[in-house]
Length: 112
Length: 118
View 1: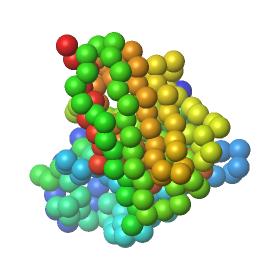
View 2: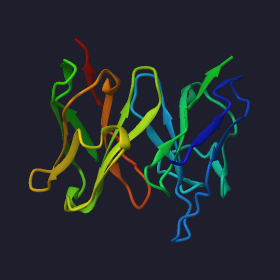
View 3: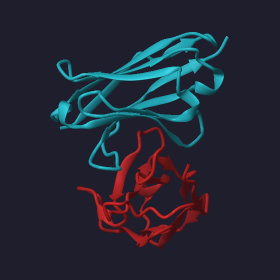
View 4: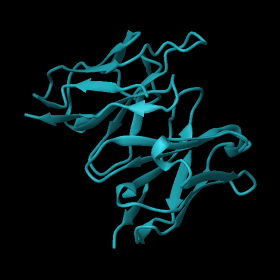
């Protein structure tokens, strides 16, 4: 199975400051169809996960533009340009290129 | 508006069985792959099973193969997860999730808690 490794696992951030989460995969996530199925999810406390970014860098509808995704191959990053209070929660990367689909361990973002 | 509403969770003894249901609305259910994802208390996310649009293709994570069965009824806009020989390690919130395109999931239900304990 493809192992997804996120870092850091805990990220204390000052309001208004940027934040960055890394996600590395044990194999390339480039699919035979040429797409890279790497996605990012946000899970606020007590809520279900919500997709933020799909296929590396595409923001879902309604997602603030302070969230951005980048990367290629095995190395990916989620960035929050200016953290707001509503961004507190756990962030997961997920790969859908290889069976079984797998998630990272999660990164907990909290306000300092 | 896409809605996914799970039901059927509860407390069950080790070795017991449970059937989860998911009622879908707000989209053309028969056109989408569907997925079950679980989350053990205080832990991360784990994909459990997928099913394609007509139910002819199913995939499972190794830890549930032979014990869990995913199915769907497109006439009822419903997804199911039949769980047998349950173990303590199956304790989790189970989410019904729409597979929004190749290799991804998009909309999630609110989840239903399954607790396996004597």
